[in-house]
Length: 217
Length: 217
Image (cartoon, rainbow over all chains, first blue to last red; front, side, top):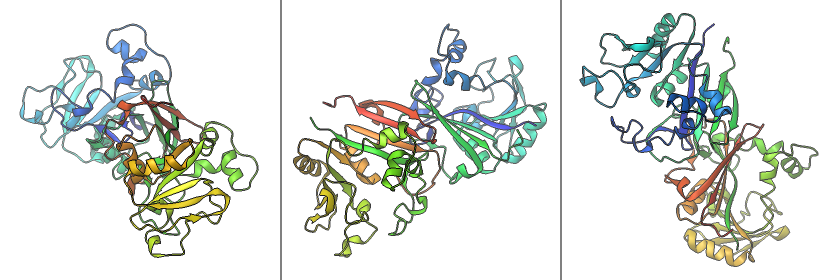
């Protein structure tokens, strides 16, 4: 049975998953890369940059769960591009010609367009759908594998609130962002439906994992 | 040199240090005791309940820092009692005749009253003062020892924002409270002034410690 999962979704101590003032040049707004610096020093992160070495501990282990067993991703319009990308018919996402997904990717947007086939197996599909509808579509395309909910925070929150997420992996970064978009709003009592574990790593972040008690896998 | 410190101040994943709907019977509102259950299973917590046994790991170690070296506490009116205690001339705090402080305790309130000497060395003093003024007064009474900022969240935040806190120890409890009083509001960029460490423990909580870089101790 395939599951629906959120992988290494980073938030600040005050719960913001992105900063304020998002633009094409600053996709996380005033947060810059501060929610993701812990990734860059891992073996996984360094390999992605074409660099040798890196750490091989829990940060790296969690990051390596990103690809295996995932057959499709669902993401929000805010992750696919800067505000206003819908008005640019040439926009093909911020990840270049060979995006790191290598599966079908379903972009939730009220402004749909035809699918975009990229190099390396990624195809972007544009869907105007509820979370449950989008998940059904993504499952159909995932070939029996898992579906990753890729963010941003509004999309993760909507899917969690709809009871559609089996595994939720949040990375708490010890910074106080002060403003932006919060992950936890509207998720009161989330812990009741999940087994929760926390592990802090030498990079300073804490991995908090929520595994749904009634998940079939 | 004495320092100013906040000890084992518990917040939810979404940053709430107390729930909504605080009353005399429910001092943490709808949060109940859920922010503090991790304490009860430690040796320190069990001893306080007159019980044997308990865990002896990092949760216990952090809790044992509560008393040693502290010469005074500052707390807010909201910690000293339920909303409206100021109208009750008989109110002597929620900790009974022998409170667990055993030092002078400065209660910040606009409704001052004469000092209250309790058993065991605790004396409550009622101050209408700014954070800096209150700290100067508490330092004067602490006999060269440290001053503990005891909470609630508004008081901790005010003292941190005023640059008066040297050591801040926050315990992130993996629950989503959804409503109440947040700790982190207005503390954007806090991490720039502190060395920050995180450690998660088997109870599920994460201890996040902020040590001010320019602190003399």
